[in-house]
Amino acid sequence: MQLLKEKILSEGQALSKDILKVDSFLNHQMDPVLMKEIGKEFVKRFAHKEITKVLTIESSGIGPGLMAALELDVPLIFARKRKSLTLTEGLVTASVHSFTKKETNTISVSDKYIKARDKVLIIDDFLAVGQAARGLADICKQVGAEVVGIGIVIEKAFQSGGKDLRDQGFQVESLARIKELNVGQITFIEEREGAIVHV
Image (cartoon, rainbow, N blue to C red; front, side):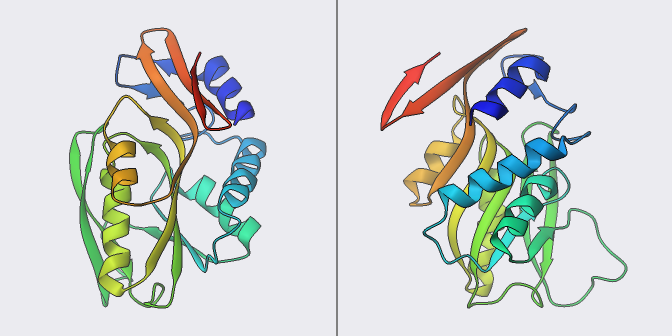
């Protein structure tokens, strides 16, 4: 997605070979125009699926997830990382380790909102080693819902998550795939008509 790549190049910061800072438009402050276009792009990529729910994880997945859900005219569910005083019964949980934050969270979704009949599109802001997507897919599996695809805003393609999820049979669509990060430098993998071009 060219608009996203341009935003990453103009405002993103490669802090190390593993960490990309995009808090000016994605995971602290959000650019609503960009989020709207991200939602449309996800819908285009999964147009052939009969999606009934969009599932993400708080908090950075909520923006792109909500825009995709709005375009699809289906509800968005976000898995909670923190315990809620009002959400205590019928919880479906999974353990998720954050590569960036170096912490493990138990994420939870109420079984009131996700059912065996649901066809679920998982959306997340980043894909590194794939823990968040796997945790969300595990929640779907526990209730018998079908994961019809996984939409990622930014994939660190040099890490194992994307390959692992694709090898498991998931349709993974990443709007920007990072080939390499170096301090002050961001390199993308460009995919055109089945060919991969490094830029």
